[in-house]
Length: 543
Ligand code: SPV
Ligand code: MG
Image (cartoon, rainbow, N blue to C red):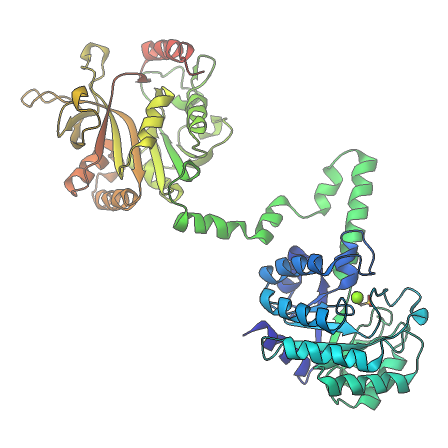
């Protein structure tokens, strides 16, 4: 329902309705969450939050700017406390048109003179606007509204200014005749007598609105029995903020610590919730495409790794120190250098020992009984439109990652075409490709044909070794998901590894493209590798 219609319904409903002050997007959202059906954008509160006075010290464009945040943050109607309309009939016309544009449902204007003063500051000395002039302002506003149900509430300040019931009724009558949708009768007394007397005389000629700031102790049933349409709790969010902020500031200052105040104040997570941070994360999955900010990384680090038994007794392989810092830290630094900041580590064995900042850790609880694909499956929801998957024991020069990210391919594997040195034991993840590496044909389109664990003696020599780096972009993510789903049907899924996934992709007709590389990477399988790794990272030229 349109916000204007919602407000009109509140004013015209047969029950007494209540709206609460707010003065910012955040307070408006809190008021809505509490269950209120409408918001009072109080002039006092809007100005007070900026420590300026309720004397039109805030310009009307500054008011409008704040209202826009409030309207954007909520689905309930806002009734603006529009003071005197910020000028004459012409300013009122422009105000009403502007409010329509930013989704504010109505405005209340008071029959005082610009610049106004808050009704509770020497109210009796305040001059009232000429009745006809004020009626002209109401009429100008009504003629300017763009939505049928936009509401103009005329606020009668006769009691505030020291006039009696007769003047108040005279004015209300004239404003109603000029087109006001409701009358607000204001009072500074601590008892509701004069507004109730007014209500009796007014006899519901049009909806009546009250602001019981001073006569706050009046039981709500009294307003209901008097047939009041709308009650405005006019300044209670800003006053809540003031008390809470004063108390926190004093406490933090005197204790010189955050410990006590932490117990009393909203968590940072609560701020994120109110801001709708989750929605943005969801939207990113749908819309964020391309750009380094959208790149995610998944590090497969669940297994203990064999061949390093003693060293991995208390920590997983990714935490082995290389040149003084853990393997994972080297990887994360390189990702970050390439602008890859969303890094997920799938951990398992001794996941408790992973102590590297800047990563999300997902634990494959079944790490002992499962292989790489089960781990990858744990991280599938952390993929972005552009994701790099690497083995947890891979060390590499940054340019390899940079080049992998640079190519335009949906699935891309880095294959090292340097002839194998089987004596060094590097006979796994052998890659067969649609063409061997040919530097004369730089950036030729080569596709993966398959990966095996060991060279087949009867087949042609492999074209290289997959280094354990796969990039998945665009439709590649879906292709990977569906290959993974196919493999999940297999009984032996729990033992399958990344090569099985790459082979399934080939089988599905989604062969990854190959990017040939020549050295500048290593994996760590034994003590000799670990020693070599120290030299590898120490001699790196890229810092
Ligand atoms: C406001 O909230 O700014 C009002 C109501 O105008 S009162 O302060 O009670 O006048
Ligand atoms: Mg006000």
